Image 1 (tube, rainbow, N blue to C red):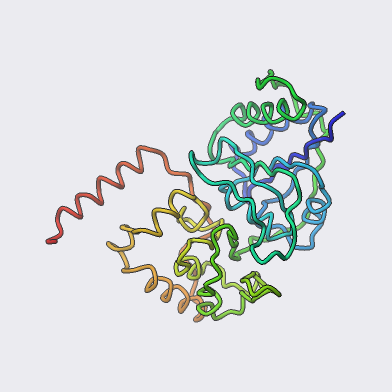
Image 2 (image 1 turned 90 degrees about the vertical axis):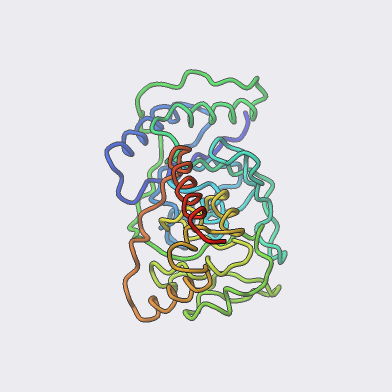
Length: 309
């Protein structure tokens, strides 16, 4: 019998009734499957580096399906930051054409295990069916069956393992090492001792909890868009690959609001240094829908038309 696939279901910080209902639906569809080993953990971003949940995740040697309230890119690199590595698998939560992360760190510090991590964003759908269908397809491919989604229904049967640990809302940068070029702009810019260099001369987050809550300044000054804060309200900073790529070229919303990203980053860093509160970064972003994106684009076009260029 093939090795079981570990399924990690991460809870949100303060789940709403709708979110709890989604978790219950997922458990109803996942727990009864003999091919899966389901574990429920606290919010992925808030896990303590040496806490019981992270230790358990590090002990898993095979493939892993991760369902979390984060962009897949953010979830993948949060796992990597905690020593949980592998290839990023293609899922419905990944944008079309988005590249798959394969390199845990370019310095060669360690080899990535020969396994796949499939990361799903639980904010993308209000019901469990799309996630359960894709999980069924992953299982079907693993056991050599035709790709089809079998009926997944029932009630939670209590077979899922729950890893409860006391957590607190954390705030720290997560580095995408597939994008990082080693320019060291973040190391030179950050005043809080968050970053350092490893044995190979590559950047890494040495003191994550030294970061000032709400300060995303290093993400704005990173020229390759490699730094994320998964709980920031701006999708470009939280790990949305489409928003991040657009932001590297031209962030029109900042042009009309507070100036260039470097100036905004300096202002945010200075406020954090002075101990001023952040402007509500702990609310995770909602993936934008086509309607809101079009309305935003239309508004920006109108403002451009008004400029005397």
